[in-house]
Length: 329
Image 1 (cartoon, rainbow, N blue to C red):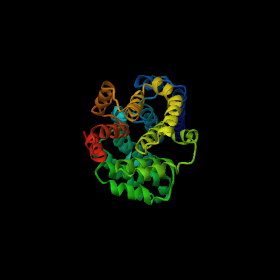
Image 2 (image 1 turned 45 degrees about the vertical axis):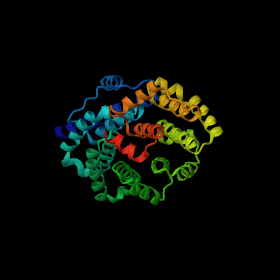
Image 3 (image 1 turned 90 degrees about the horizontal axis):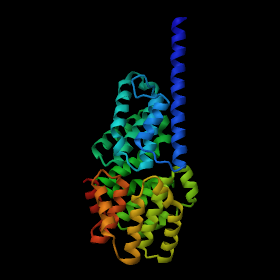
Image 4 (image 1 turned 120 degrees about the vertical axis):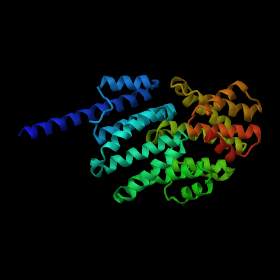
């Protein structure tokens, strides 16, 4: 009877922790919606308020919640590199629970997907490939989950191919997928632009039929911002002046205020530089230097891609070759 009571008490503790983690995640999402800056101190304060510590007693579900919280923070800041140590600390706890992994394949798959993605965004291709391989191997052993993780897997593989010099394999993989979902289409456009397949990229953009509001609700506002930046680049490439001006004005109206409030001003700087390049053939060298310096400070890989496009235009260089050079810096 005493053993049963202890087990019930332990289960209650686990459920209580799950609830507290859910509350932290909900508060983070609400804060992001209200344009609050989500820095490390704010996250740590929230975790302390809800008495959450990274320790061995954490269940698989609790560990996954913490991974999701750190992933959300990284997304909002466009800075995955800053959270890698915490993610590795969490994964060390996952590794210690090998005896329980057979009961938590779904959570383990999600954790491996988030960890490999964090290393991709941080431009650490060695660790990216290590966790991507683990993710694929575990998925092959758990085929019932294949449908749920199939898009994550092929998208991660496309990322790896493209940024390790195998652009044609990445494009073939993306084109072969039957899905017309948002993130694969977005990355396919990126690949096309890097290979100077501008018309194909623009045709792919036109296949995204839903509104920005719909994409923001279902995939997150940060991806809609990337979509808008890609569209501006394509309009410059295709010399669609009137459309460019209209889209630029709309983009500024929708997003600049929030970008400023969240400290993500690199996007504003980049947009200004695109505009100067296209409309005035003129550049603010100080602003270019700001972007250039950030590239050498473990900048997020997608921001490096945008910077590479601008640098390739200014210096008349091959975009794909320059992109690989910069992301591997």
